[in-house]
Amino acid sequence: MRFLQPTTWAEALEARAAHPEAVAIAGGTDVMVAVNFGRLRPPVLLDLTRVAELQEWAPDDGAVRLGAGVPYARVITELGDRLPGLAMAARTIGSPQIRNRGTVGGNLATASPAGDAHPALLAADAEVEVASVRGTRRIPVTDFYTGVKRSALAPDELIAAVRITPPSGPQQYSKIGTRNAMVIAVAAFGLALHPDRGAVGTGIGSAAPTPRRATAAEEFLAGELAGLWESRGELPAATATRFGELVAEASAPIDDVRGTAAYRVHALSVMARRALTWAWAEYRTAKESRPCD
Image (cartoon, rainbow, N blue to C red):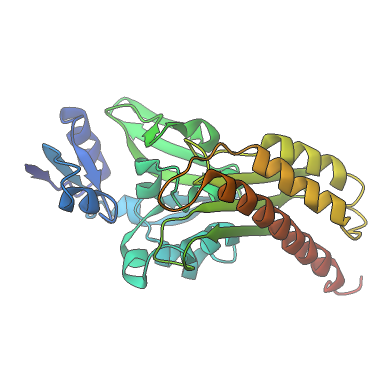
């Protein structure tokens, strides 16, 4: 096995172009597990941990450009106020040691249906910035997942960053498993309210061949909230219930060792209803806590 360790982004892209068979490694929290269990024997490992450009985040024209190598621990401590949905997801990932090593870029590269960051990224309408020696392009996160553990990355491309415009309203994230963290999700759900454009974002994890949005649920809820954004009135219980049902209908789960398909459908319905109830309560409270004009 060859081991390549570039120190600049340009060197990393050149190495990727020369070795498209290489497996990129940053935190190693997925790659090394597969190597240790004998499921992966890459001919070349491309270590990206010394590429400083990947370790930073910065504001970018109203968005946050999150370098692919920024670990979850920093998402929690440095971006919890700007990207609360992603920070919520990050808090459920592994142990403190894993959160210090694992990255959103690595989660995307693996493209596992059970990846914890995916629902939050979908709900926030994130874009994945990928690059090669040929240039840079942005892929809407909804188009990034192409199959079970497959993505839209070309063989000579690497993930440079994730670009997220912070939703203008509250965000929520729910994950169900045998415990809160250090566990692969049985099902997960992300929600973001976008009152500035009268829209709703959702993300479903671990309940379909790929992470996905619940578009019918989004459209239904946006319509129901059309008369409530300005008044911030009470959310009808029937609206929350129907929203949960539509989220569950958007899933396509299977039975596996972590749970049955029927359980996942039920769990998604409950998580979506609760997430909406919490998010809308936060939205209403934000108005009440504003100082008087």
